[in-house]
Length: 74
Figure 1 (cartoon, rainbow, N blue to C red):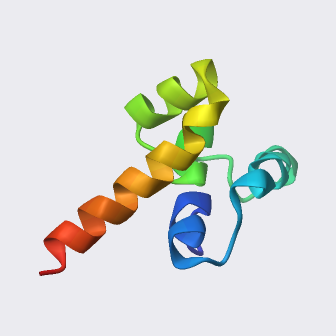
Figure 2 (cartoon, one colour):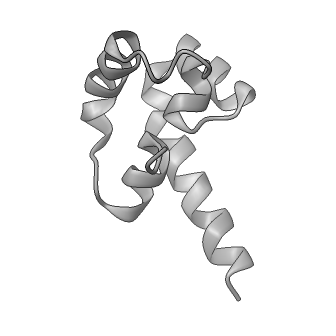
Figure 3 (tube, rainbow, N blue to C red):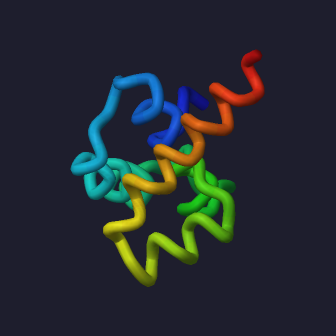
């Protein structure tokens, strides 16, 4: 599978407002049958649960992932 939505956001290859397009892709694709939506999007279950309740947290989820990547890249 190619990079997930979250990974693409971190790399600047997708924007946060494209999440609905990725959800549509998951619904429409036969090749994603073995992936839960949160896995397809690249979220942990905890991240997905937070986002599902409060979609405005998506930016914070992506930013936190960026901070973790930067922290562990040193």
